[in-house]
Image 1 (cartoon, rainbow, N blue to C red):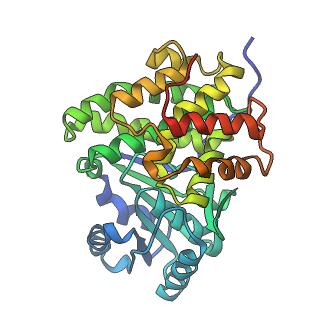
Image 2 (cartoon, rainbow, N blue to C red):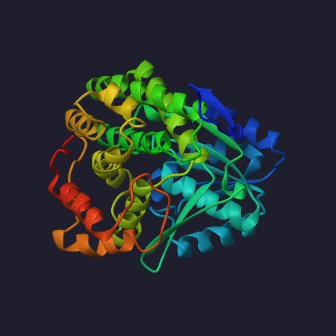
Length: 354
């Protein structure tokens, strides 16, 4: 018999294809707004300014101050700029940093959001906001956080550097991994996760050989949408908790941290729910889900050790203590000792054993 489940339905409007960024003005007007503030990181300012220009009289300017892990002091500056602009909507162009800033503005002001992702990391379909204050990253969920519209434009990913392509894809795979054992999983989300795993497995090696392979880029962006949807509609557990620990308390780069932790967090929970993680082992081989992901990560050149993002072995005790400070749902019980062992393996970069 199939387990009982609840499927809440998907509420975010998705526009997917090539050249779809040109529909941003249409989507803003569809939401009923006549003034919009464009958000980006400093690195993507020129792209944000070009987008703002294309919006014509809808544009209320650009705020190009988004940074990793959404620190609340940056958010306050952005909220002030949003209110001063007279806008009722934000258009977030970029990766997770910009998407996070748009969410932080929305939950404080009621602004609508149009998100245009340029990586595969995948927070755009979620009702989750992670914010950093006083050296720790905390996460909350609310319907007010979920963007109204997401525009996926394959063309924007054609110039994504190979390294970021790999790490943001591994970040996305982490969402699918945790969704497979989430207590509130459902058949729709599980099917999306399985489809995404195969698309990344087949697409990433092609993108490494030819970063401008448009069909492979479309497959990867589709997989990213599937994984982002999974992240946004079921509970996340140990993997995401650990990623937030390192991002919020050690300021490690977001996508790389997820990519490094993925094989080890998978192997940790595989000991308890190997049946639920079997789709990963089936997709990537290697004799186990954790081992298969480690093999795949190595084959595509993804970082495998926490040392690669500046973590010292002496940091691991503090990280483990933070990780177990608050309780959260996870399929395998956690304690300081077991988490410390997981982190040691991730710091050394050794392949998880089945």
